[in-house]
Image (spheres, rainbow, N blue to C red):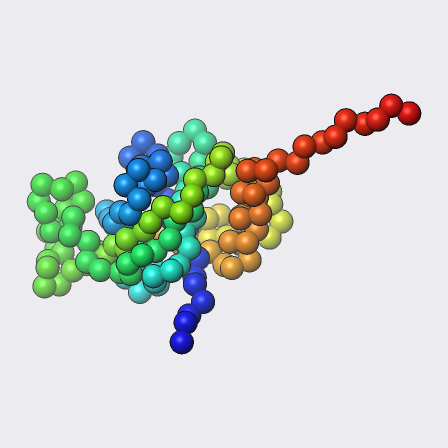
Length: 168
C-alpha cells in the first residue's frame, strides 16, 4: 500500500545553507534543529517521498526559493553528540537521543524567490502555519497550500507575456 505524501516547509538562512547549496550537494541531512515541536515533526512526521518547500529566512528577501524531497525519514541528529559542533547538546546521548534529522534531496530551485509578502496576499494561504508560528523551522503545509504555491512558482517561472494591443 502506498501512502500519499505529506508536505512541509523547512527554513534555512541562505548565508548558512541555501537552495543552491542543496543543488550542489544534491542530498543532505537537515540537522541542527533545536525546537521540540520541529523535532517531533522530523522524528515522527516527515517520511520518504514527502515534499518540502525550501524557505529562505532571516534575509532581505524571505520566502520560498525551491523544492526538495525527503529521502530518509527521522533518525538521531549526530551533531548533538559532538562537543566540537555548534549544535552540541550534552543532554542528548547516543543511547537516548533528543534531536532528530531527516535527509532531503534537491528537486528544483525557483527562478525567483516567492516573497513572504506575496504568500501573505495569496488567497488560500492565510492559515499557513508560517503566519501563525513564524519561528518554527519545520512545519506542515496542507496539500491545498502546496498546490497554490506550486502555481505561484509556475507563474514566476513562466510569466504571461502580454501581447501589445493592435491599433484600432
